[in-house]
Amino acid sequence: MSFLNALFATIAATVATIPVVTYGAFLLHNGLPLPGRHTARRLAALGEGMCQSVGAFCMVVAALPFRRRCRLPLQPEASAGDAGAHVPVLFVHGLYHNPSAWLLYRPTFARQGIGPVHTFGYDSFSNDFATLVHQLDAAVDALIQAHPATPPILIGHSLGGLIIRAWLSRHDGARRCSGVVTLGTPHQGSALARLGIGNLARSLLFRGTLVQTVERHEAAPGVPCVAIRSPLDNMVIPAEGLRIRAHGWTEVEGPAVSHVWMLWDARTRALVLETARRIRDGLPVT
Image 1: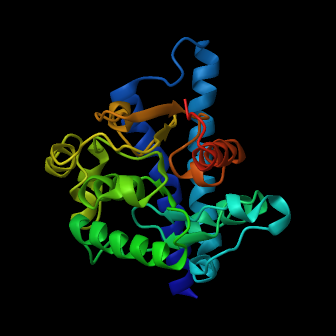
Image 2: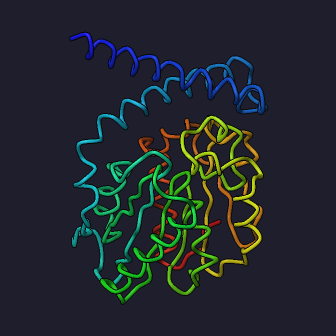
């Protein structure tokens, strides 16, 4: 019983500490969110972000039992549209996460006839960034072999988006995918990487070597690429870290939610779904 008490105390301390530290850093680097709004509304938004951060942690834990199921491909519903319009989707989770990150996205996409839906999972502690890019390349290759008719759409949250971006420029990605969507990706890194556990996390420093290496090898992608960011993101600090210094990308400001809550927020999910649908249909993403 003492072990369980200690475990619950540790979890509770973590849940309480993460929003305080991350939104403290947010205030230090960015000031209050939503400039131009009334001060009371900006303070309320900050409080909402902290509550979402706590809620997101709880959702991550609650979703853990589904991580294996979320690795399985999910076919789009035939009634949702013409099968000829289906395009494979590959979801890539962020740092310290697993395929259960996409627990709500997978069925949403399938119901709307977008898919088949696949996930790419990785270990955040035993791999470096270059290894993950190569592993993603192998996953894309396998997906193309399984569904050769249409190149896949790649969607990544946080670090997952940066892995996709590096893959896009290093592995002839423009020829092998239909488009890319990133959510809350630290395209220029994050100052909070200094607090990360593991070499992979600490390599994501704001304007650090890894980011500059990705930029140095980058060219205009040649396919629709959309970077969705939140004005309330508490993990990518400063907010400039969410902006992408690359030609050919479309930047979109999504709903004001915390970094991980992007995975659970219905408005963000609808935005990603609509963006993927427009990529599939060859429509402008701006």
